[in-house]
Image (cartoon, rainbow, N blue to C red; front, side, top):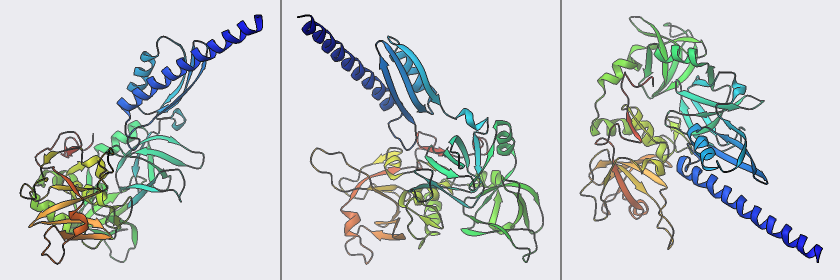
Length: 390
């Protein structure tokens, strides 16, 4: 009889513990869903061990507010807090970085064979979150995208050094592709290649062009016709659909590259993001993210509501009960035509009578967003000389 009672008590205790553990899991999941619903832009990897009324919380996040909210939600437990809030203390304060090569490949894992998730152009400021023993760094781009970058692609700064770098005069490369030369002498040799949107420190001017410095201390020279002082460039930008189309057409024929955001290769959303960035507007990285922002344009009844420069979003018809997925994005250029990266950057039409008609894309058009009427709203940031350094 005693044995039976002990077994009943043990069974009830285990059942109660399982129920308590499930409650903790639900709380963690709710906080994650609120603060980090998209793993592409936020980290909230939290687990726990339980022992009676005591919880040991483990894992990492780059969202201190989310951690604080979790601790409040679990205030009924005795908490042993082992959650690390990134950036990691192992970085010893060097938790800033700037891309120091023409195009840096960010990967899903700290390994060269891993999937490339995006790219960052020369001069892009990065938040550095943690590192591995073999010098890979988990970084976050200005638009919030997370990825791993090896130490050959960035130069690390501490907070003071980063402030000095960001506040220094800058130069932006405005040609599609070229080279930073060692000096004004065209026979001096190259320091690095550079693509449209690359940014360097401006250290001097000559009759022929600009003296520049890289984040890692290298110096070089760019001809006047291929670059512009960043502040002057930003002030001179026009948020005009004609300029958007003009920029987009500069990339015609550039090959498709998954994760690409440069003239060396672009995916569909890397293309739209780069086109808008070269007009002083920062968009979210992926098509499914870009589709969340801007003025929504009704395309259910046709194309008459579209204007030049609108973003067009495409996706396969969902199975019953499943949500619509966005898998592709392009830019409307008028006359029922759109430009997009698919195989290579090219132009297609919604008009069945056109020689560039795409039945495939026409059948997959889901929605459209107007960017230029929604500047400085979530997901659409207009860059200015005042806010660029932020």
